[in-house]
Image (cartoon, rainbow over all chains, first blue to last red):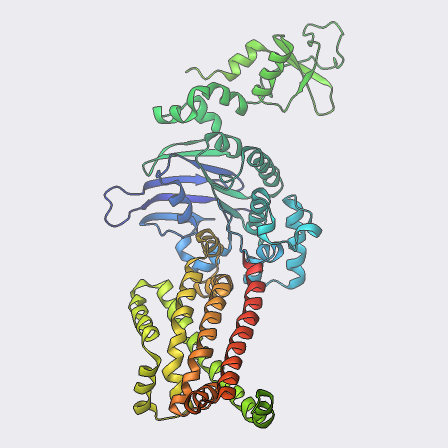
Length: 331
Length: 208
């Protein structure tokens, strides 16, 4: 279950400051999708996130959850219906992992049995064996483990929306990458509407179905990673991607739709056909152009076989096709 | 007479005075805790209450005999007067520790609590207070140990306590009384200190 989020001309001004922290912000996040808010420090991304759960009150405009304006809802009820994950985790040090996770369900009056079951379920979901971790205290956990508990705690009451403020910012790159992958896996199962703040453009591209680039309180560009990479609306957005924009673009375009399929009926390598699939290792049809490119660099050939989930070769991708699909040149 | 004969002869009286001292300490620590924690929390939450700190500071620094002397015209001579005059000595350490305990809670912990939908009161009772508890208890311990010795002065306004033995010992040059009174006071303070320290350490082990 998830809901759509809509920002309508949302703004935030602080008294005494000439420039608004957030100005005239409008966008829609479809239910079940994720949005990355990206931009430099002070651009208003965290402020915008915190206006959703009213930790910061908007000065103007409307924020709608499932088409209900957030100020129509009682404040505590609003917050208890939104999962909130922050950079420094904020686990309650005097409570066990299980008690931490149980926080919102307890506020909602769930039965002890239901809470216990939910804690087990969530610990398993975030990759922490319940038997081992249920009774531990936060100080006994590593940074990565703490943030897993943080995510479990946010998911506890099964909120339709998750708000995440630089959730993996305090972790080392390896742990961060692992948790990012796990979040993707969790999202595939749960289909929550997720809004997350990050200053890491690669994280935004990896995790976001859409990206909102902000600067000085304003929205610079809003769209899918592919759209932004292909058609950056602003020199600032180009800058954000850096020199490697084209390479990043390869990550977000799939092989699907760009490879040359074998004529139907031809399933084995070696049979002479009009489109003879190249020898050597094949890549999955679900790979990205980046993985295809890497495979070509490794094999040295200008063509690579594409296989389906069953391992059967279904076509081939040529370097020319890759270039055509992966180019970020203006068309 | 020898010390052991003294104890033999006056044993029950000594125990009675010990008990009176225990009562005085218990009530004054309770009062100091109530006042100290409330003011400490108030100052932690709203800086404007800060004016109360110099007041507590002054009471702490004021000589005990002055406080006693001031209390007598107001409350007469008795248990209540001794309590009211002297409990204030215990307020400052509790106040200061309450303040640092509450303000010492990690901001991210509070932000998470607030963002998750805990009300202000729930944040206070379920998060801030439990996390501040070890510091507050440390303050109570310091105050309690201090009050054990300060309350011996109750003898000077006619309120019986271990101080009575000490005062008698001084007045009559009676070594037995003096020794017994002082030793018991010191022992009381030490036991109280270590007893509260153990509780404090158990609490702190959970909250780090």
